[in-house]
Image: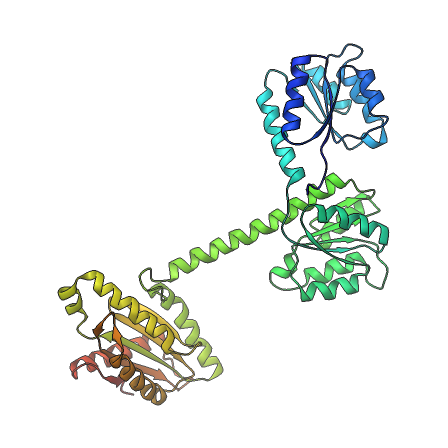
Length: 431
């Protein structure tokens, strides 16, 4: 259901141009009324309200700027969009039309430009929003009026009469926008509600806040923005402007999330191995130093395992690189399921993998990896009997300078020793 019905008045004495405008407006399902004189337009607006009025500059009984000025004097048309059409290019004439109250001026010879304007306008007015709004207003009648208009856009709206109740709901739920009056019943004002929301950590504290106020002095406007209001309107509210402003805030919020998700995906792509979808070497260089630093801070033992598939070159030579890739993929899937959630698994390169065992002493890692070696030996990988050699290093001396580089060097020496010892075995680094 559209948020605002587009009611259009066309004041044009040229039949062809009047028909062109009427056809354009009706293509956007607007309710259109036509007149051919200024007097007829004035009479029509006594009984009807219009959100869009299109006026020819040259009319039989008056000029368009004079008609515009008279229409603007009507309270119900104060916020209407008035578009003036002319073939004139006199700058002073056009300036006078704007001063008379015209919203914009279009040249009759460039109808395509006006078509683009109407398409954008109609899409904005009739756009359906997807999202959850939190609405706070202590006047039940005003609350009902606001809720009705907001729900017409497609928004789901939760309503509250006090800021205290609204804040509880905000903390429990996810909202795309908060719309609040500044003067509320209860102990908490709208300003204090804004302050409480803006103090919250992470994205929740960045939720757009639209303020409604009965006061429009400059000092009050400045205060609203200082406490963190995203946008505001002064009463009495124009529903069309309200919905445009709310729509813009929600779309900006949703665009922010889309960009944040895209950045997250791009970051993950740079940290994941494209073949196996395990963390890659770049991720290892970022994550392991932090994990080891955390372990030292918390005084928890950690172990590092280097795993090297035995005779992997034979798979590539005998069965081709596609089969070799499949072995790496299935090995990665096995590794992903073989360890705890707090452990980290990386593809170091080629047929080598790195496993970071959190809260695991060297002795515990030796027992664990011996069991995993036996499990892997029994597991057929892409239809092949594959074994692996494992080298383990670790630290339990939390005051030592041992870091990621030293742990990796020790594990690399240990896996080399495992290879020299006949493969398919587990070797711990010497202390």
